[in-house]
Amino acid sequence: MSEAAGRRGVPLSDRQRLAWLRLIRSDNVGSVTFRDLINHFGSAEAAIERLPELSRRGGAGRDIRIASVAEAEAELEAARRFGATFIGIGEPGYPPALRRIDGAPPLSAAIGDLSLAQRPAVGMVGSRNASVSGTKFAARLAREIGAAGYAIASGLARGIDAAAHAASLGTGTIAALAGGLDQPYPPENLDLYAEIRAGKGLAISEMPMGWEARARDFPRRNRLIAGVALGVVVIEAAERSGSLITARRAGDFGRLVFAVPGSPLDPRAAGANGLIKDGAIMVTEARDVLDALAPLSRMSPPDAPLMEETEAMGGDETRAPDEDERAQVLSALGPSPVEIDDIVRHTGLPAQLVYYVLLELDLAGRLDRHSGGLVSLEYPQT
Image 1 (cartoon, one colour):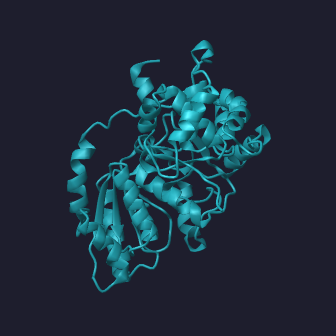
Image 2 (cartoon, rainbow, N blue to C red):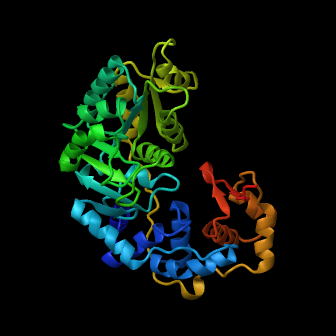
Image 3 (cartoon, helix red, strand yellow):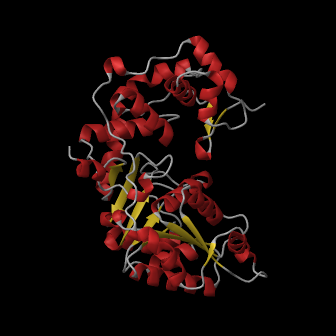
């Protein structure tokens, strides 16, 4: 494989895609755990075989549930009937900006104009209960930023999200969903979603087909918006809102954060005004966004590491830790999040063994992962 082809990505075979879907749909396998399993065992198929053993070593109280071949085949068929496809993180069609975030989804379901995933994007989020002036300004920003060549990414919610999507249908819009692609929310935006599905935009989700969004799923959607975008614009966000979660994730990912100022008498503006106080770029016209993003658009983004399957590692596979080594890692963990590098230094163990123990604990449901790569031991509620 050439260096250029490696940067573009490598397509998954049908067999690999099925195994990847089985692995990510199995219990206690999140994005970071998925990556570590592939790195340790070389392929999703090999990792699936090791899941029961790893979870038992981690102290699981019951057998881990592994998604069956039939379940994965049914979801792939449901996606095909709906017109959607699953794109792996190492494949050419995966959004390049999303690939570079910590814990990027290994598989992303997509429908609509798949080419939009390769366009530079700007996220736009804000209040569901938006004012007339807020929605008008969001629409104007979306049209003008879209006309400059950017896709507009948002969350298909009422208010600001819907206004941004509708205004950018002609130039390219990306909708991140909290549920499965066949379970859009809210109902009043179904017509808008139909236009996006038909090719006037792109919809993406990391959730299973048929999955109805719950409250705890929306932060994952917000992470997708921040992940696909070079920067996120916040319009009319209250002090405690999902829009501020999106802005915080954007900052965590090294993206630019923009905010539109509002009246101090309007509680819908409190969050955006607070972002400006904290250093967000103030936006009163599209040029504020375009000028700030111009240097980023002209730069070639750094190549993101591709998650690729390898031949079986055989004798090169990391050995399993012994009980003494496992106990050392456990004693270094507690309820407070710590950096993995600190665990390595504290125990004096090779990093590969520390990661192996963390993988066992994760699959047993005993590890909490936090932003910034921090980990803590999960303690049962009393």
